[in-house]
Length: 389
Image (cartoon, rainbow, N blue to C red; front, side, top):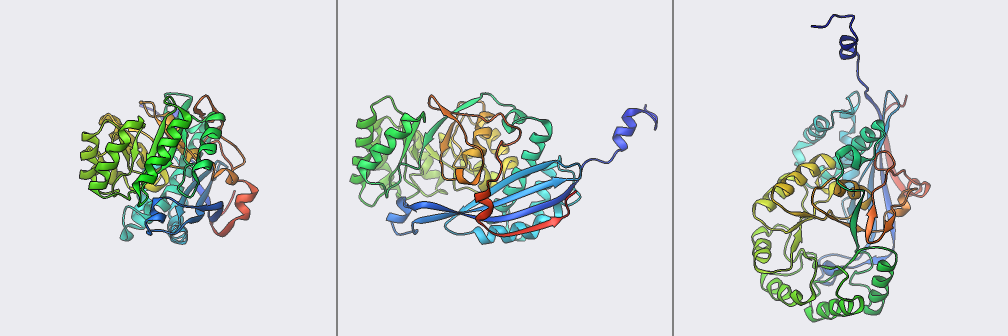
């Protein structure tokens, strides 16, 4: 039993830190050139020219700060910002350590529009900011806070392998990526003419040799018969995986491919909740699971997904946003892959180091990133809730 004057009783009675201020910002990152994958060549989407970033900055009464982000491609940026602005006030006065509780509170604040999709992606920026704050307060990198298994992770480049890239340039890009220390190359496939896909993959395999890891990504553009034929054809190239050969929600189709072929099947990046990933895992629809932290609602649901994936014996390859996923992948027991995209680099003052085919996990507190002046210059809308200090 403790008395009211004991140190333990005083600590228990003392009020904890509280969130006092938030800034929500909508930032548009222009891309150097329009980006095309199979969804463009099949007429389903237009080339991508910019990425809508949603930033959340949070501060507490004791002066602790955190930075989080989510994103949207082609459409959805204004909607994410509007939803985030609407639900942000529910965090004022809350203890920033109660991250799981606050995720639920944000979710229920906008529950009438669902627990996945755009609303969840808006929550992701708050969740990442709270984890960043927690790690900074502890003086640890996010990976160390979560309990890392390694200080570096395997990485592969995607940005040099899009379908708008001519074959000769594709070979130059691949050589450049390997030369700078990136461990593997991913090529976009899924064109209406599958022979062109095979020609590009064959050329890159011959150019790089048999030892370099190569992945391909069809971006959901094949039907089941086409996926069967293409997966069979690609077996000869010793690929690390074939990504999204079918629609993201065709779990039965993906499971059949995973069972039939030696080349692993990778999918999951388009799913927007832990529940959706759970359904994919139950169907045994992937060898490599590819959750996207911002898309599923942040680090809190990502950790739930990772636990389910580990229990199912799956390999992990988080999608996009390497600035976040390098930490989350480092905390996964099985050796993961992290996707290298330099697109977001202008938004931050810091850079991730690459060496010997691996991405080095930043040792700075939190995510180890801060917004650049250029990022703030690209902000189109922002709002503040609460008061600093």
